Every structure is written in C-alpha cells, then in structure tokens.
Length: 442
Image (cartoon, rainbow, N blue to C red; front, side, top):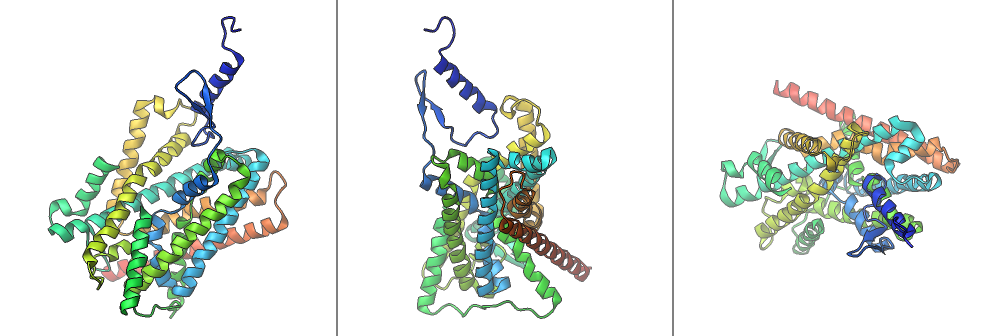
C-alpha cells in the first residue's frame, strides 16, 4: 500500500533516475531505461560485439591518415613493426587501467587518476583529454579542408575536390570550405577498402614500384627525424578516456579484456593494411595526409572518380564524427573549469560561451596550422602520450591497491621512459627543422 508515499520500488527507480542526471561515471547506455509506462524496462548491457564496435570506432580516427607517411619515414619493415608495437603497448596500458579500476571500484579515467594522485591528478588528465581532443578536431578540420579545397605541401599545391571540379574561386577556397563546414554541418572503412583495391589493381597491371624497406639515415639529424613518427603512432591508438564508459555498458564486465584485445587486433589490422598499401601506392611521394595524394592520376580506369570517392567518403565520416568528439571536449572542459557549478545543460549562457569559444579556437587552428603532421607532433608528443601511456603506467607504479606485479612495474617504467624520451626527441627534431626552415627563408 502507498499510504501517500511512493512504493519502495518506485522510490528506487526515482533514485536511479536522479542519479543518472548528475553521475559523471554513468555509462553511455544506462542499465535501466525508462519505458512508456510508469516503470522501467531492464537493459542487460551491451554485447561483446557491440563493445568491440564502439571501442574500435573510438580508436580509428584521423591518425590513420598520417600512418602511411610514418611508414615512408621509417621504411616498410620498421614502419609496420612500429604499428604493431604501439598496439601492444596500448593493450598493456588499458589493461593496467581496467585492473586497477576493478580493485578500487572506479568507473572513469578521472576518478582513477584522482584515486592515485588526488584532485590535481584528476585535473591533469582532464586537461590532457581536452588538449588532445581539440587537437584531433583541428586535424579533422584540416583534413576536410585538404580534401574539399586543397592543400599546399613542400611548395606544391594539391587540388581539392571542388577545385578539381570547378577551378579556383573564392567559394572553393580553404577558408570558405572550413567556414561552411563549421557553421552548417558539424565509413572510413569504405576509403580503406578502395585504397587497398586500387593498390592491388596496380600491382596486377605492373604499375607499382618496389617500396623502400628501411629508413634512409645519413646523419644525426636524419636519425632524430625518425622519432617524429612516434606522436602519430600514439595518437592513432588513443581511446583511453572512453574505456570506462564502454566497460560500464558491458553486460559481462569480465569480457572487457577480450573486447580490448579484439578491438586492437582489428584496428591494428586496418592500420597495417592502410599503411602498407598507401605507401605502396604513392611511394616516396606519400604526403603527411595521404588523402591529399588523391589528386593525381592513379593510372587506372576511372581514376578520377575513385579519387573523389575516397576523399569524399572519409571527409563525410569526419563531418559526422566531429560533433561526437566535440561533445566530449565540451563536457571535460566544463568539468575542469566549472566543477562545482550546476549541470551544463541547465545553464544556457555557459553552454553557449564554451561552445562558441571551442568552435572559434578549432576554426582558427585549422586555418593557421598548415599540416596535420604539425598538430600530430604537438598533441601526440604531449597530451596524447600522457593519456595513452604515461598516466596509466604511473598509476600502475603508484599501485595504491597493491595488485601490480613486479613485471607490471618494470613494464610501466619502460613505457614511461620510452614515451618521454622518444617524444622529447620528436619535439627537438621538429623544433630544429622549424628553426632551420626559418633561417633558410630569412
């Protein structure tokens, strides 16, 4: 009997509903979903295949467009081996996060860092996630600009789709295309399949030159330049901020390790195929953004049609993914700056201010940063390296719950040292190249 109050079951359901509104650790898909009636229908969680799909979609992003250029710098053999090594290290770093989160009953990356290093640790990981995701969004916009309007690399202009169709006009220029995309719009695998198919066809007709298997190292500078691929490899596998959400949704949480391994095998396979056939197709002419290469004569029937199809399909994918990544940036930035304020959705002024500020920053970054390689170097060597490898390894070394083995800690030290040294050399190499370039022009 109710006796003027809610029944116990309804009280529990109301409590769950209220908790979902404010709980930052709630899964993307709640365990209880409201039905059309007064009660709730049980949701038993995401399936194994659904979790693999979600995590794989999170991993595969703009980083894949820079991987063929990594293989060009390293050579075919070291380049492909580096992609595999990066996948292995990513699997171990995520495994550290999941295992320690289980021990501490922690359900987000922020709370995991907060548990290990306090409020400053949580704030630090939020800053890195915001910086990395803003960098990713700038990369998305640069790629869209390269594909639609064109790009300039090494003094050579590569035409975009609109320029190829209609010529050079103000409305086919990079600034207008990005502005239109920003104000109006905001199946990569389709592109990958076409790249592979084009390469195989050219192999059959004998239009592929033998690729370089190893890097060309002539002095210390060229050796240091090899390390510039590290930030790109790091960025390609970043998914750590979404692991807890996917884990929270999973019907059987014990399957999460299998989900991570399956997703990484799938993504690494796609990366290997794209890098191998991309470098095979364009050789030493492979650009930092391999999509920019698709303005040349492929030497096959209907080559121009395939060029446009590859570029348009990936650009369309980025346009639809952009709002998803942007949402995560806005939420993390709001939580970092206004942690004690009311929910963002209830404050229209704050919502509009943060949204407009981020849009302007991303738009300006995409117009003034000349290449995706430059932004890869900045975010990949700093924020992405911290989120993907340094923070998970530091949490394992901290080991507040006494579950890390000696092997875990040795591997964690190795990951931190490798990430810090390789990215430091990459930053030095980029800075040296930039200074040298400026001196040449002056």
